[in-house]
Image (cartoon, rainbow, N blue to C red; front, side, top):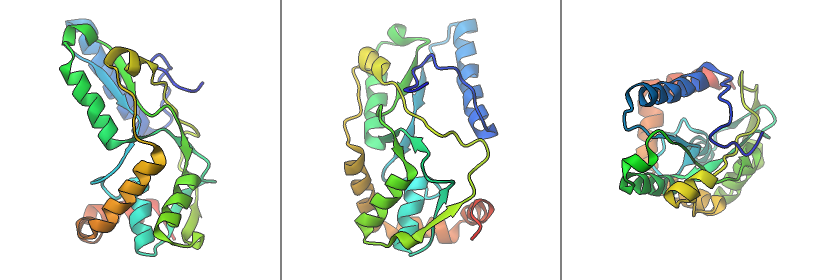
Length: 206
């Protein structure tokens, strides 16, 4: 069922997702048992400047700049709810300003309420960089890969008066521009960090 509101059943389909769901429920259990001042925030897929280049958008931007393949899982039609990092920060700032007694124990989605598929993002990145679609490399889909994620943002609007203000395409262009201007930063990570190289070799086989 989409969009997913805060009451949507947690049914993680991978160990990675299960770890996040477990942390969510563990925090909530402390609220229920000890009445601790806990608020659970569920940010959907963040993107923007300074994101580590193993994540989809910075990986594709930096690979395209280097004329390396862009590894698209499965058909590329899987969708996610993308929220620009500055919008996400504004949501957290609003939460900090609210008296904890008013939101204690709440679960709040932070998303755009819209979804975009991977191929659309890939095409937009290649177009913005003036690169050819031949860089797209379809790879075997991940196990337990969820087909669609889209958030309901009604609760965030009602409780904290927040909604995402950045259009996805505008945010993507700003992100591409940031990685163009900060090539030295991400090259140090991609070329110098052993962990990054091991991650890339483990998940992408060309």
